[in-house]
Length: 341
Length: 207
Image (cartoon, rainbow over all chains, first blue to last red; front, side):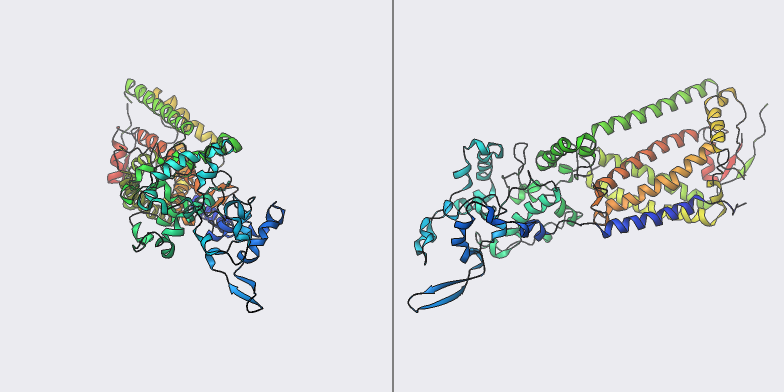
């Protein structure tokens, strides 16, 4: 007989489900969401007081024209002021430049001083640009970034092999906007988005892609149609985890391999000794443990991946509990058999 | 001299079908879940196969849970899951003492199975905990992992996906333990196999 006066657990669950749905909806409505590409690139750019930088005033000589989409100059022959449109690739956005690694530089640290006169001489376009290693190589101050190892890895990469000297550091690291991310940004997802945007600058943009090849740019969505949960992988994993040879020495792998050698096996990431723990993830977990302690650092480190998240402490605890329960069952069964129960 | 046994029809067809489906699904989910959690490149079940099978079994388990939930809500079976709070701890203790001491002295069970009392207090507590707390959590967190985009990015400063992952794994662990204990306790009956037979023909044999 059903005792209608009693509250069945089913009703309690329904009420709990309702409460859970309300909490979840509230959390979702206030959720900042996944980082949007433009937010990651222009993060806090609008709040940069760039005039505080020591070369800002001097740089304004260049940026008064190259800092916006239009520039004005005096045409002495015609005796009048002329307004022209600046070619988009030559526009240097002050906000992004003064957030970048090279924000303390003056323009003429890298560009010829001859650029200070206008109109610029045509042959200045042919000036060679320094590569990263030209300034950072052999410098103790930058030893932790391992520029020599990066250079070696890059020279072995498919980018360098296929395109030789045409493929320079600046193809990926825009000298005017690039800023260090993996070591400074505590938000792992933002770092992933930032790093992936570097790849997408060419692999997601046909006009940039075809600067070095006449081939049609492959459609990335179609090329990755074999990948389950594609959107989740794209927003949570860096392209280089599968497309570059990772090792423990570099936070950002530079030995990009050909598509034939790209990782395609689920077990490469979703298993013990996951390749994901060779670079950014192990670095992030180590840093999290340093900052937040073992429990928060290991358990809640934004690196949830099915398979490799095998916390040994939790494993030991669960195996011990399981072992004790099995022993109790075996002991109970043994006593029952003795008593023929 | 032992009492003559009585056959009680306690498990109607829908419960037996649900129970068998649930048992099979839980076994498949535990095997594939462990295979994913402790995955190595040489794991017996290939990761991609384990994921597909785990997802499919999880979806069927969700449907099976809804059947159980509605069945208990709208049929008489639900009454067996209603815990009468008054004196419950005492009843739990009594049942615990029977399993640890009384059974070996061959004393009569304190709460023998009847049509009104299908579960003893320990069974009632563990079944309610499993079916109304642990399984709903494992199902909800499973859907959260199946569609990561629906989980919140951050909850109380902790990664939402990470939290969902841990809840799913911990609840899965509890279900694994429950399965072992449940199967063992089912051997305590008129004969070691009689309770298993009950889940096939629906009749419980008292002892």
